Amino acid sequence: MIEYRKVVLEEIDAIIKSCSRSHFEYQEHRSLSIEQLSKYAKNSLDSLIAKSSTLAYSAHDNDVLLGIIFASKNEFDSEMFDLCCYQISKLFIFSEDASHINEISTGLLDKLETELRDTYDEVHVSMGLNNNIQNMDVIFNTLTASNYHYLHTLLTFSSSKIENTNLIVEPNNNVIIREATDNDALQVASLAKKSFKFSRFHLDPFLDNIKSSILLENSAKNSILNGFVDVMYVAEIDSKVVGYYSCKKSFIKEFDKTIATIGVSAVDSDYRGLGIFGTLDNHIASWCGENADFAEMGTYLANYPIHKTWINKGFKLIRGTHQFSKLLNKSTPKK
Image (cartoon, rainbow, N blue to C red; front, side, top):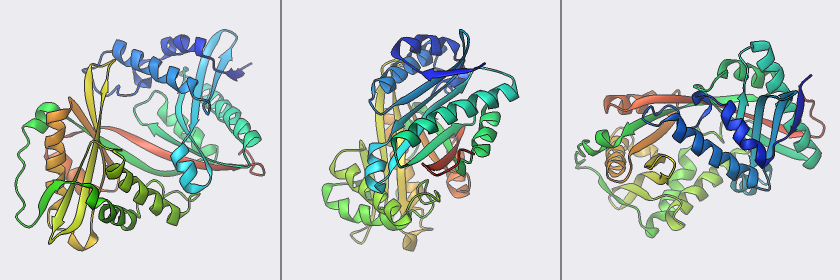
């Protein structure tokens, strides 16, 4: 009989030992050893378990660890939507039998949802499922059977320092590309608010579209005024900001590497077809070559023009992340 219980800090080492490489974040980067990945994963789980909002459960059969689930409250999203928003960051199953995987993952989801229903009147739960993770196909089916709504698949590409450093930034005579200043914040925020009708938030049937646009507007503004990103380039035509692209870097001590995450970009719909995105992308990639060991950038499965731009530059597709969400309330049935 499977027993479900709360994870405590002392169990983290045992969880890491049960993981294979496919469970670890950044496992697609083959230059990283499993020792580096496991150390990073342990420190990440330690940090998660220390957060007061984190809910973490494990599944056991006697002394055998069968799986884990970790979820934490997203404070920014909760404030913007005036709704408690939780994100499942880990759902690992340590079994190879499909029916067993389904039973364990369903039990862990039920345990988490019961706790959330008992605590909140209404909760939005989201999850990104890496297509490279062990047992992804069975977990995908379990989420669907548990009434999680499939939103879309985010494709992530990666480029190395060498690829970015060797990238030639060709001038676009029609456009001025420069780093954003505080004076650009309002124009960038306005562009963000009207540009994203195809985002994780807008695709979610449980989230308000108007609030979704305001969230993206505030995020863009905060990126400039509050340093949420390390660099943002804007495209300017006749003193008007018609596009922007941002990037954030972080040094991961366990890897002894700096990783750049290329963030949100937008081009004014009235100025598309002028090569603005490609020019912004070249500047961002060049910045990554000077400031990071490798970079990751993402876009949705249906965004073929951007796929083509990155593939033509030699960037590699490394993962797909299937995005799910579910709205829980006290009257909603479990299944």
